[in-house]
Each structure stands twice: as C-alpha cells, then as structure tokens.
Image (cartoon, rainbow, N blue to C red; front, side, top):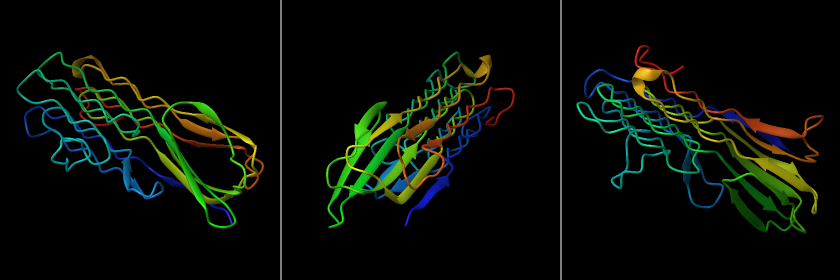
Length: 231
C-alpha cells in the first residue's frame, strides 16, 4: 500500500557571528538512496564570518547537503551560494563588508517508477515541467525538495523534504512538476534574505484522495545582522 507522504525538514541555516569563528555551521542535509547512488539535499547554509555550509564540508569544498559556506572575518568574501539542484541554503555574508549572503538553491523532484515485475525507472528534475507516466509502470516513489533560503548574516535554511512509496499511478497520466526557486541572498547589514519557494507535484494521484497535489515548503531565510539567527 501507499506509505506517505512523509515529511522531513531541511537543514537549518547557521547564525551569523561578529568575529571568526563565531559563524555557526549549517545543519546537515537529507540523504536519499532513491537513485541507487546516495545523494544529499537540503543542507543549511553556514553563518557569516566563518560558518560552514552543512558542516562538515567535503575535501572538494562541496558541503554535505549542498549548503553554502559563510563569508570570512575579517574580509570581504561573500557567502557562497548553495549547490545547484539540492534545495540547500545560501551561506551568510561577512558582517564587516558589503558582501552579500549566497543564494539558496532551487529544489528538485525524483520519481522512481516500478512495474509489477520489479523493473524500475528513475527520473530526476531540477526544472518545472510535465511528465507522462511511462507504459507498463504502475507504482511510484517520489522525493520532493523545496527551494533553500538565501543567506544574509545567518545562513539560509534548507528546503523541506517530502517523500513517499507505493503510490499507484496509471501509464499515460500526466504529472505536473513545479520546482521551487532558491531564495536570493542579501547584504548582512541590509536586512533578512529571501526564503525558498515551495516545490509541488500534482496530477491524477489515485492514492491521495481527495488531494491531487503534494508539496514541500521552502527553506527559511537567513537573518539580518541585528538578529543573528534564522527567521
């Protein structure tokens, strides 16, 4: 039977600090094995002045979960933007400069179709589109990730994550995918950043009655310098 929809919040953004290393690290994102290869989504952005996005970061510099690192202190480096297509938060900017926080990442949708013979087909989407259920596939799993919030002084929060399994679908039916955008970053002294936007999956989903729309809410915006925490 249909198991879901399930909910899981995105990683929280880190608070901005006044001196290094006071910027708080962003929270870890959410891992999914749906594609066969573990992927990370929805990491929190690091706070300005040294916070790391979705700490700990990997040696390559890509934070776990995709959240952007915060800017340095002292210095003029802006917060890093989140990794594209992960629904993660942007890093906060340095408080001693006009450098802005990083942008949050847009969300994503992953659909995994299954036949009665356990054959599977996985499709990933990072842009809004429509998709037809393929022939011979009658069951679907999904992962829906909303857009991450932008960074200001504090890092942006990761977008919400929603998932489900065993959803009955009919070949030829059309689903509409609306990918939520990431929030825009903001200069730390100028105010809070912009939150992420909801991602939605809609269509004739027979196991979800009466609703035909599944959504996941956008990540919180990074706070301005004066507050020092996420809003």
